[in-house]
Amino acid sequence: MEIAEKLKERGALMFGEFTLTSGKRSSYYVNIKKAYTDPSILREIAEGMAQFATGDRLAGVALGAIPIVVATSLRTGKPFAMIRKEDRQHGTAVKIEGEIAAGEVVDVLEDVTTTGGSVISAVAALRSAGGVVKRVIAVVDRGEGAAEALEREGVSLKSLVSHDDLRRMLSESTVENR
Image (cartoon, rainbow, N blue to C red):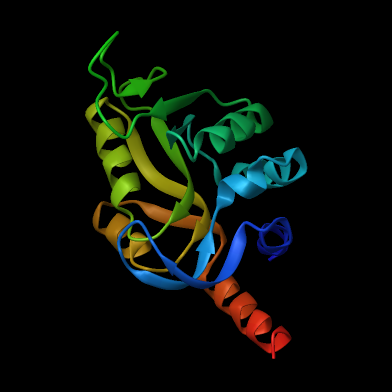
């Protein structure tokens, strides 16, 4: 819960009425970038991620997860890869920067999971490059279907801040504002 409190203190966890990228309405919004630009919070996130990162390599989707992947790589000493959301049309035209060896176990790090769409795309890209993906580790899981969608792909989801943590904080915020 400590990371959730820091997200709130930093203004990265906001309560109100928001429209998410998916078009869904939500009573809270998580702007993780607002928090992890503070090195002390990024360090704490990396330490939390490192506890779950048991694979050979780390990977994250650009842009949101890259600072988290780099910080966790520095904490664990594990190499990392970066996955573009879209195929690159110039230069080397690769979707993944960083080497993925055939059979290598890759832990995917994510900032916030909602339905799991973007992280499932990342899992597919890593698998097509020869990686074995068994786990996604998120800073925040909004509890809106990502865990179930990943489970259908044979991937578990771990998070540092759960939907229950967010609900508890929302309840506390509502009480504070009365």
